[in-house]
Amino acid sequence: MTFALACVLSAPVADAATKRKTAKKKRPSATKPVPAPEDTFTPPDEPGPSADPLGSARKAVSSDVALFGVARQPAASDQAAKLEDALSRKLGAAGDVRFVDLAAAFPASEPQGIPKGDALFDEGRSAYDNLDPDTAAVKFKEAADTYVQRPGDLRAEKLGEAFLFQGASQLLNGDVAGAKVSFTNALVAEPSLRPDAGQFGQDVQRVFTEAQKELEAQPQGSLVVTSQPQGARVLVRGRDVGATPLTGLKLAPGRYPVQVVLPGYAPSASYTEVKSSASAEVKAKLAPAPGLSALRDAAAKAGTEQAFSADGVPPEVGAIGERLNARYVVLAAAYQDKKGRMHGEVQAWDLRTKNRLRDVEVDFTKRDGKYSANAAADQVHTFLTGAALPKGRSSDDNESVASGDSVLRKPWFWAAAAGVAAVTAGVVYVATTDRGSGFNPVNGLPGGISF
Picture 1 (cartoon, one colour):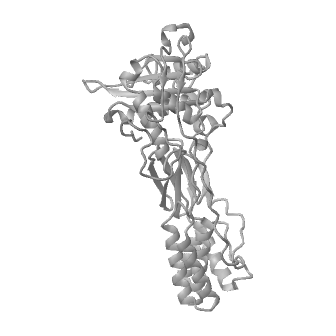
Picture 2 (cartoon, rainbow, N blue to C red):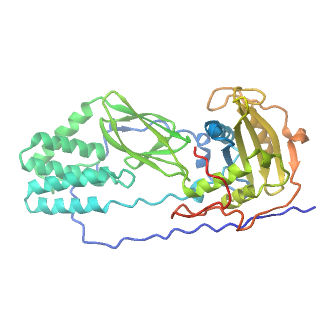
């Protein structure tokens, strides 16, 4: 008997790159990069590849895995997100499971730039070159303020240069204290900046050096960044410093642009103040972008009790696999019973062979053993690879991962698809782009679940 799954999906729309026209010729650089002091910026240890399954290299489209947690009621949203995260980390730690490359499916948009800030900076340069330090100081301050308001599009070196020229303008007006503050801000914005001796006099060089020594003498602070979901990349001054949860990032006292980015999610960007000998914390709750939200809507439809009980491949599962080029689709459903107790149920589909893993139950009160997330991960791993997870310590909670008997020896875990699920453009349409608004990415599906 031959089984087929027809799924009509739109091909991803290629982003049209628009190049800006060249304006006027740039002035000679007023700064020169030098190595930053070692104690100014100290990234923490990077997590290993197994800790970031979504960032792993994509080796073969045919065996990629798409995994989604779904909540059957709003009250189960947190448990669904936790179950998705637990399964992702445990399967990723095994080293032989390849997740879909969400970065390729949902490419990040390029920074838009801050033309208003650039225009104010140019006005400040013009005033500075015409020996009008009062106007120059005002314009450079306005430029810096404009840059700070757009941390997601900010270029750290441009902000540092605005502060540097602001300090030089203040120094021309005899405001040494104000100039030192501006020079300190320049060093916090971009530690490698130094005033070019060909552009600035000895007075600027001297006060800038004093500001640098005073900043280096202050005890550093630390930055802690968490996100929901976890595994997002953290950028400070536009530099990738690790993945969430991130701890132990040592920084000189000052205000920093912090971005938290995860493929398929709208990025979070903010300015955060780090104080000397203190810890600053950034908590980012990332919202799915329209494309991923459409896939989550499809997963919610396929994760209902009715869909889990039915035979065959749910149309939405086929749509997810087609959109993400995934062979396997794993859905982890969380729900609340009539007595208010939380439960979990996991199913997985092999879209090539039409095999199906079902009846994998999760008891959220158990941290190990039968019906735990560890045991569920073991059963899913056996379905995906034909082998149980290796026994030993898990990477995240230092508890033993229960391997159990091989699922291959328990045929009651398996069920072949018993019907044909046809998907037409009028039934399911998974969004292929996150750009634009006002469209209905999944026609006829319920509202999205936010994590």
